[in-house]
Length: 430
Length: 143
Image 1: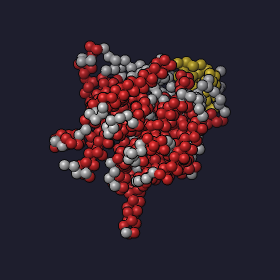
Image 2: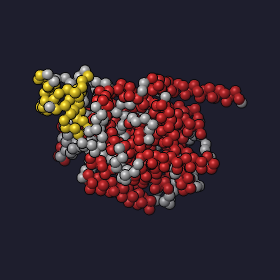
Image 3: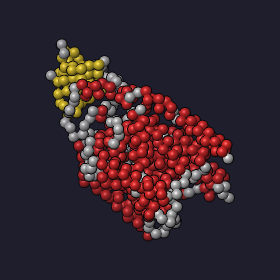
Image 4: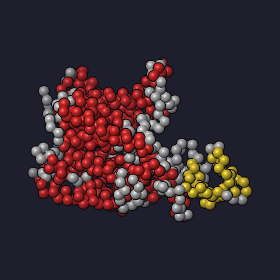
């Protein structure tokens, strides 16, 4: 029974932590109609950036938890009195989903491979009260991996009523489900239908193995947040909170996994080709993205002397080997592997089928170029990692990591699919 | 109007029950109520077998370990050391005189009485005595 109480306690804690700073967000978006999940996603971006900053200092995780919870509690009263809280039921369903998935983790708490040999030691570092600068002494042997997710994991674990690491992983479930409900709320189809979509979406994207200590679910959510922000950014010619949130979100992406670097390049490209964004703002994005990349790169280079692409010991093949028959044969195996991943995460299959449908029926009004660009760049990057590596065990790496790379960005296609459904079946656009 | 609302509530309840069932939530809930966290961890990682969570925790508890311990896993499916984190403490030294051997197959060669030679993955680690044993999991001390 204590376990159930603990889960409810931690979910309440997370709900309060990410309720702050709602007052600030509402103040800065006075004339903009934001729904509750949009406010929550902005709060998450802000709070995670603050936590990232805290991870470099030596601060007590209990104090951080209680301080944020108290601030969240104050925000709760403000929301209760001033905010027109529509779709309350959807939020209750969200909390129910967090509970259901948390008990799923608790009932099978096993950590998977990379988590048990790598990520858990970073979590232990923060759990035991050390900060980022102590990661040098951590056992895992891969200094170049970023740490933000493990800090959140440690924060929740440290404040759990029972001392087991899996309690901290509710952190990932909470943020992952916020991202799913953010999309569902954006394309609201009525309560019951939204509930069914919420279930189908989570059934397609909740991979228990990835919630066993991997950082992919956090990346999955952050990429959804940034895509949702791109829609907001498009509506404003002057710099406002959404532009800054885009940059802060990109910063988080960099500090969750190393692939984040590639993802924010793709996102920058999408922002640069958006017609509605002014040149001045495009310049702002280029400069700010360059700055955050430089900061992260400098910290890892100067302090750890490590910045890796791919995996530890990754080396590119020689230029003259790129088009050799021997290397070219890899492509077939990689395409085969890619197809396996598409069926593992069916959002890809649905996305591809929809694209075919749109092109065959010439209903181009449903297409948005940014999804196609993101898809092709993502596939290109994923294949290139294994195609260009000199490691003879490249196929082993592809078979165990390609799915994880593609999982991280798969949430984006959920936005495309639901947007298509809304336009085709609900708005009936002509 | 009330009947419609009642019908809606009933429909919602039914949807939630179906979703919970499809999600195996009832089974998860039952597992949480029936087994303690320690039992679930032991079920997930094995007592003596797999990562041997049960054995390692037992050693930690009964011997009140302060230092980190080297854990050797002979199971060929574990190319990485997945058990180390169970008792690991950051910035803590390793106890060079003791170690835990799990899933022992033929690493431990009997010499005489409580004296064994430990040859792990073709590397001779020296002579050891057994401090505690459970099936093929051992807590060893260097002689």
